[in-house]
Each structure stands twice: as structure tokens, then as C-alpha cells.
Image 1 (cartoon, rainbow, N blue to C red):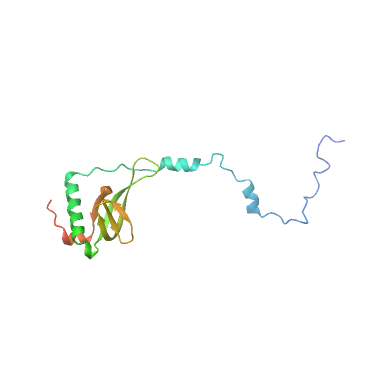
Image 2 (tube, rainbow, N blue to C red; image 1 turned 90 degrees about the vertical axis):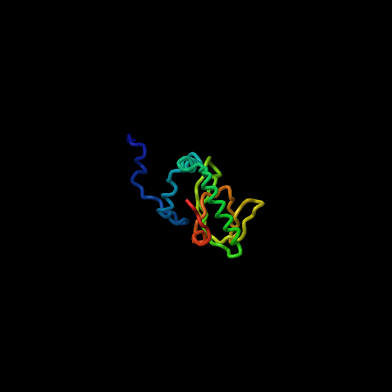
Amino acid sequence: MSDFKYENIINMNHHISNCHRPMMIKDRAAQFAPFAALTGYEDAVFEAGRKTVNKAELSEESICILNRKLESVLKHIDEKPEITVTFFCSDDKKEGGSYKKFCGKVKRVDEYKKEIVFHDDISILIENIYDLSGDFFERYVNFEY
């Protein structure tokens, strides 16, 4: 008897099944891919690294300008003015949020819900508006700075 434990099988050919096809190399590699030991860990790391900003407080002057712009939109609502709104969007998962821009034609200003409703049924709360801009305001609103 030899000192080597597997001497009787070491030189045998690899068995090839008559019933099953050989596994594709890419599928074989997937068997040995690392698994996520902590489910949700990558999402948590991404969430922690995602930046948010606090909602800016508008000055009295900025509020007056926004009010004049809104009045102008109300006055010309039949013309379906196209405006660009910069607004604050609260984050669902973290404190703070982000500023977004939306451009569209105004359908109506809902004074009860205090929101601007656009023709594609997107609505933006007036309290979240940071700025209103567009060619419409250059035509109809005079500002004295």
C-alpha cells in the first residue's frame, strides 16, 4: 500500500455524463459568484451617500416678485402661459430634498389646494416654488429692482 491516499483515482479520466449536457462556462462561474451576505447593505450605503439640501427661505422681496408673477399667470390663464417652475421636492427617505425644474403650460391655479396645475396634470404646491421664469414673464410682468 502506498502513502498517497487517492493514488487509485488520481490518474482516471474526468467523467462525462451521457444524460446531461455540460454546463456553460458563464453559468458555472455564476455558481461561485459572491453572494450578498447583508441584504440591503448596498442600498443603505447608496442612501447614506446621497446628497440632499434644505429648503431655502425666501426673502420678502422674492416673495413679492413670486406673488406678482402668480397674479400675472392668473390674469392670463386663458392664454395657457408656458412657464418654467423651479421648486423644492421633499425627499421621502431623508431630511431635506432637492430642487427641480418643470416647464409646461398652466391649466389653472387651484387657490383652494394652493397649487399650480399644468395641462399634463402635474401639480406643484405654491409653497414649494422657488422661482417662476420664462418668456411669458418677460412680456407681461414689469419689475422694478
